[in-house]
Each structure stands twice: as C-alpha cells, then as structure tokens.
Length: 88
Image (cartoon, rainbow, N blue to C red; front, top):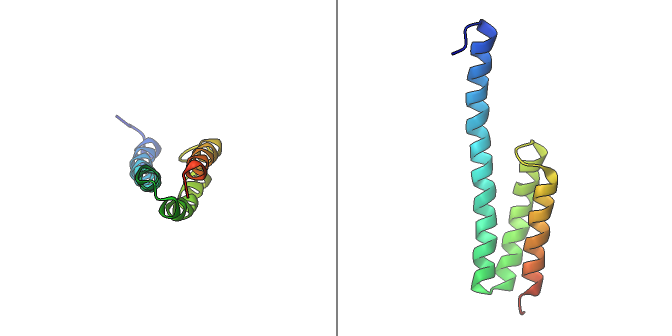
C-alpha cells in the first residue's frame, strides 16, 4: 500500500482514471457492437448510419489515449469494408 502523501494521491488518481477509461472503452465497444448488429442484419443503410455515429466515439477514445489511434483506424477500416461488401 502507498506510504507517502504523493503515492496516496497517485493511487486515488489512478482509481479515478481507471473508472473513466472503463466507461470510454465500454462506450466504444457498444458503438462497434451496434454497427456489427446492423451488418449481421444485412441492413446497409442502418450499418452506415451506425458507423457514422460510432466514428467520433472511436476517434475520441483514441485521442485521449485509451486505445492506440492505429487500432481505431483499423477497426473503422474493417467495419467500412464489411459495410461496403453488403448488398444494397
């Protein structure tokens, strides 16, 4: 356990940041899930709309450093390709 005053403060900050980051990751995964559900249903318009709504969430998650920007770019790219492959 933390002994010094600064170590105790760092521990408190870590708990707070961990909670915020968990929320951000959860929001990111939920938005990806909505896109994947629309793709699974075969609804190209709904999938495109869901991806358009998910993109800012994903980019924001990368911007604050919860996940790497290349990870987010890869996810967006793969989802876009899957939507493009759907029949109109």
